[in-house]
Image 1 (cartoon, rainbow, N blue to C red):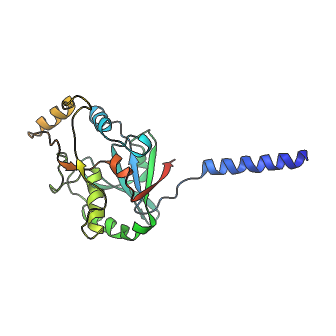
Image 2: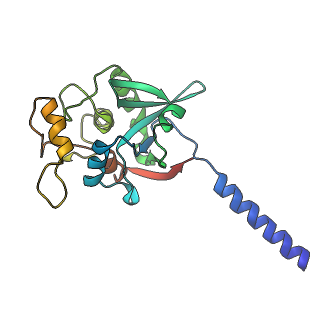
Image 3: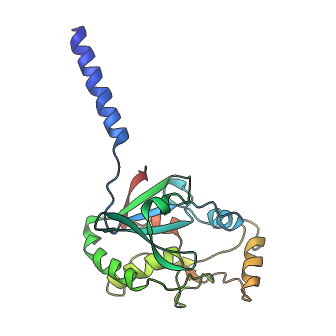
Length: 210
């Protein structure tokens, strides 16, 4: 009896360890959500956006498997470009979460990828204005899947806010940011963010990527 109990406990422990060590196998079209530490700007974004299970996401990209490489399509820095997975993950010490389109929608992934690849080199949208010929991270994903969905919205746009919650006043960092660009704060203009997309009913969050 004692040997039987030991065998059962050992099998159970092995099963638990195997589950803990299981790694998400990324697929082309998967979305990776990231919380960047970019200072006051990211703090301001996180203060007014909500993500999956309350997580804060200030950046995102889309997975592309090419030959033996895992690349991330992203709009960041100067433009839209491809980034090796390890380099993308190294941008943040916070947990990364993987989202995958539900089975019913996966047929549009190739078209979304093709659209995204056509945007390589398009300038980063530092103005955060939708449909101005440039892209910020979630805006690229929004347009890619809109194009793949026969030009019908797939994810949702919402009025953007740059105000401190409960105060009605703009975050000082946003006032300075847009003054530097010689433009008014685009309060209320349509837009999207990684947190909002992570909550979409079109995707399943598979968990943390480790």
